[in-house]
Length: 390
Image: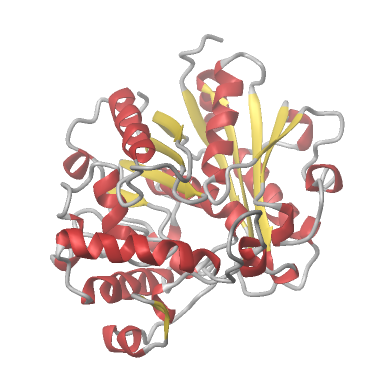
């Protein structure tokens, strides 16, 4: 195989997401692994390598989970790589798996991702004292809310944009039975009147902490054709993929519009031959932990012009029935098992172009983008998938 081997997703599995799943971490992982292998018509003996996506061990209290989960992942006597880039880790893991295939090191790679946050303390893990820093138990929202306030200042976006994004995503989740948060009665007024957590972020504009897992099977062109012929289910072809990283804190860094995110998107679009993302993509699955990150990422990854992302929300273009739906699955606002969240975005994009997204299938979806962000917006991963062979 050459470095330019065509890559495809031939199997996808996800668990039910919930505030607290009454199962072990191994059981949670096995749900998605079994589903992904069944989708691909494969067994453990067909897998050449495993890539594990997981957030910091402090989040759910299991050290070196790649050892504990060897049986659950079917990884005994197989090469296992654990990828770690904060919340974006699932996206990075999928791209790493594709690199293994392109490098000729494996033919069929199983990517596994999970978090069981009911067994840890997410906010505490993000707020532990650091040397030479004031101790501040602010969690993720405490970090991102000033960035959101700066976006509002720069763009002049009206306050209701964040509320509308929250409504759009929660209504999308009602179409997805695996989503954690189900709020069919949500309204803009309910979001507006919910408690303020980190100004300007309100409770209903924030992601939950969730238990959940996801798995995908990544392979090359010949295997994709063989597997698809056997299962009768189409692959999702990877048209472009890229990751970029920048240091989380340095003088002059623009966290509203991180250069690493813009560069990753530009690279993936160039590989896919996309020059007008807003016109050439049918939907986007974006990593949006707080509602205001929808316009922020629309601009950062080139779907909207700088300062204009919020107008796409205001015009209804990113709602489920808009011309470019964002997070038809319900997104991170409706379920956030952090170690799996990035892979869920990538997997949902793949399922859409395969025509297998179920009740939240976007009609006519042929090309989609999956996006993941991690840490203090310093880790970025993105892939463009399509129904047609690139």
